[in-house]
Image (cartoon, rainbow, N blue to C red; front, side, top):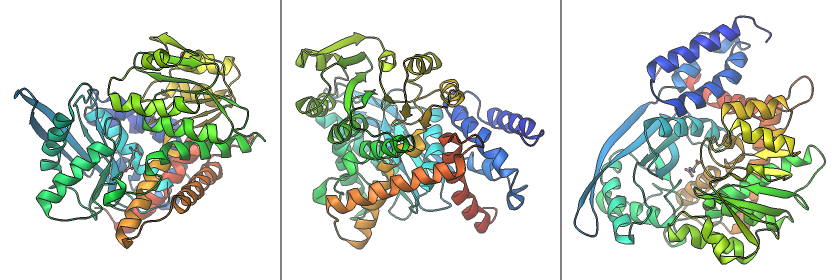
Amino acid sequence: MENPNIEQKIQDFIARIEARNPNEPEFLQAVKEVAITVLPFIATRKEYAGKKLLERMAEAERIIIFRVPWMDDKGEIHVNRGYRIQMNSAIGPYKGGIRFHPTVNLSVLKFLAFEQVFKNSLTTLPMGGGKGGANFDPQGKSDMEIMRFCQAFMTEMCKHIGPETDVPAGDIGVGAREIGYLFGQYKKIRNEFTGVLTGKGLAYGGSLIRPEATGYGVVYFCEQMLKTIGETIEGKTFSVSGFGNVAWGVVKKINELGGKVLTISGPDGYIYDEEGISGAKVDFMLSMRASGTNRAQDFATEFPSAVFHAGKRPWEVKCDVAIPAATQNELLLEDAELLVANGVLCVTEAANMPSTLEAINYFVENKILFSPGKASNAGGVATSGLEMTQNSIRLNWTSEEVDARLKEIMIGIHKACRDYGKEDNGYVNYVKGANIAGFVKVAEAMLAQGVV
Ligand code: 2IT
């Protein structure tokens, strides 16, 4: 480090954040990763001195926590906890997904909202950062139970959001069906037809390519990373984790560009298919998601070429490129060690914070091409931004137009990461690049707007 005091400053900063947010390990992990890379940068900029910019960014502007009571098909009453974290609105209305999953808690949503601020800034579109959700488990629920839950959730959330205020979207457990129910309830209570949610169906203001966008964006980003070492997607082998919306888009685009997908996974284990996951197998991922059973094993029952490895993660498979596309902290140090030992060329994160800090450090120390989710998965929210634009101008763009804009945005993010992440020895630290590039725009806006 150029500045001997900076280590101490980072330690002090993290200690303050930890003291103010006890028992929030995921949130602390996300802030730590940013602090380590951004505080040394802040120290080089006179205009940022003493402004507590990162400290302000690490405190949500507003957090709404609410009761979500609902009745199941048997008439039994259930109570869940709903959240909306309005993290930062310096560069635009709060924007970010809604997650319905039993693991949802304040720490998880605060980490996601914090990451979203930097991610949305990287897209170059005018979107602040937010995130929400509930500790609701959609698994095994009937369609009507899902509808009643969405309505109960929106009955409170509709008081806090709006197209110029906060625009939620989907995330784990929230897809097109849930967005439809949420939109219907918002419209009924507020009596407004507006672009208050993204990921909407095409019939009522949705955008073409939004369902595919996160995964496509990841692969466009990966393509750019590989290009820097003179490589392409074509002919490469890929280990992908997850089987949901993001993994589906990733697998679809890899196949289109001539790569071979060896694995997908679920909470129960992973699938290895030496013939590659393509064609009807990709469509089957959609029915796995729709079935709501959350089992990767079903894939092996359907396709004889697929082998199911119970309770294991796919990172033990030899591959050229690894794409974690399931959830946070699904790739640990021991997985990173295995991937590197097996000669992985590139790791492109598709989920939010899938790698632990120790795994990231191992990739960076070994000079692996590694991109953090907040850069490489930003195509999802970027396309949400394009949906907001189409809603505002009351027009629908063609798939080709949306896809071209998405690709251009991903190429731009890749360039921003390289510009801020290039180290003296030529290695590009995408983590550092994404954090600093994302930080700068938000910081400039906050400086201009004063202490608010
Ligand atoms: O993590 C994410 O970026 C999302 N779940 C998408 C958010 C959005 O507003 O489209």
